[in-house]
Length: 174
Picture 1 (cartoon, rainbow, N blue to C red):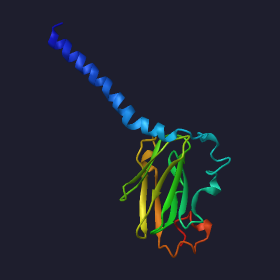
Picture 2 (picture 1 turned 30 degrees about the vertical axis):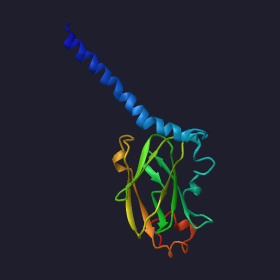
Picture 3 (picture 1 turned 60 degrees about the vertical axis):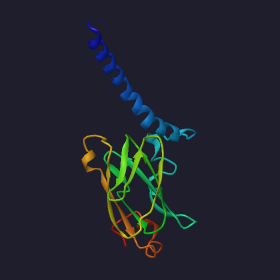
Picture 4 (picture 1 turned 90 degrees about the vertical axis):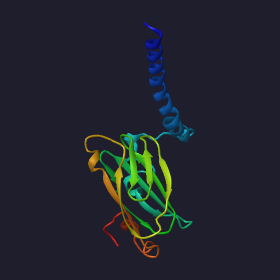
């Protein structure tokens, strides 16, 4: 083998080794660092107790005037399917996965939250005006991935507190 071919083979091998290393340090490491010190959730037991039990999911007014939304992602749906939030008020989203990696993306806003099983993903949202925002899973999660859609319905700030708590998780209510 001549030196030119050997050099090409070595450079190709080096390049192929750098791709996974780059992915690890740019994607996996920040995710792993964000999980340090957190007790992992057992995806199989999410529905049995704790913050992600079915009757805790949806929108809740906090004592400081902000809003917390708790959601569950699982193949192939978001629970609740639709959430109701007020316009102009900070919204604290807490979401977890019951089965696979998902991504909760709110179309037209730039919000995109990676959702991992066994962890709680958190982000702050705020919608300046009332409207309906479609959401979708942006992480391939299986054969039914294409149908994993939901929506966020934003109502005027003054209308939101008047809704009963059971209406806040139901986009059909107003």
